[in-house]
Length: 197
Image 1 (cartoon, rainbow, N blue to C red):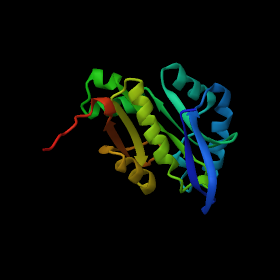
Image 2 (cartoon, helix red, strand yellow; image 1 turned 135 degrees about the vertical axis):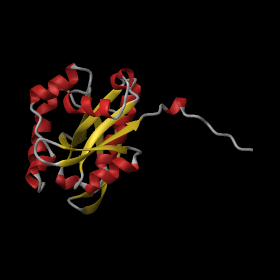
Image 3 (tube, rainbow, N blue to C red; image 1 turned 180 degrees about the vertical axis):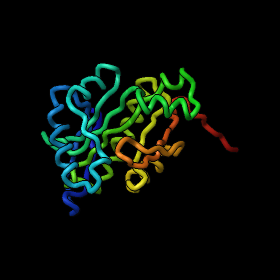
Image 4 (cartoon, rainbow, N blue to C red; image 1 turned 45 degrees about the horizontal axis):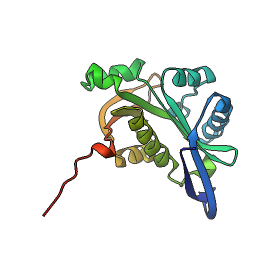
C-alpha cells in the first residue's frame, strides 16, 4: 500500500467512515482494471475519451519501467491510472515541445485514468495524479506529460490546478481534440527555500 485516503461520497451522497487504499497494481490485478474500464465506459458520453488497454498493454507498461496505481475499497478497484515511458505520439510531442533526449528519458506519460462513477466527487483523479507525481520523483523522473480532451473540463481543471501547462493541442486518431500538458517535477528535498528577514 502506498497510502490510505478518506473518501466522503458514495453515489453522490455524503458518507462517513469510507476509506480507500492507494496501491500499486500488478499483473495479478489486471482483471480489476478491465472491470473498472467497463463500468466507466458504460457511463461516458464520448467513448473516444477513454481507449481500452488490454492486459498485454498493461504488462508492457510494467515490463518497460512504468507503473500502475489503483484505489481500492476493500477488494474493489474504484480508480486507477498509469505512468509509462514515452513512445509513439507522446515521444513526438516531447520533441515538439523542445525537450532534450536527456529530459525525454527522464519523463513519464501519465494516463488511462478511470474513476468508478459511484465514487466520483472524492477527488480521486487528483489523489492519483499527486501520487503518480510523487512516485515519479522517487523513480528519478523530472517530467510528466499527459493529454486531456479539450471538452473534458473537469479533468483539464484538475491537471492545471496541479501545475501542468498546456503546450500543444493535437487531434487523435478518433478526431478528438486534446490538450497536451507537461509538468516539471520538483523533488521536495531540492526545492529552494526562501528566507525573509
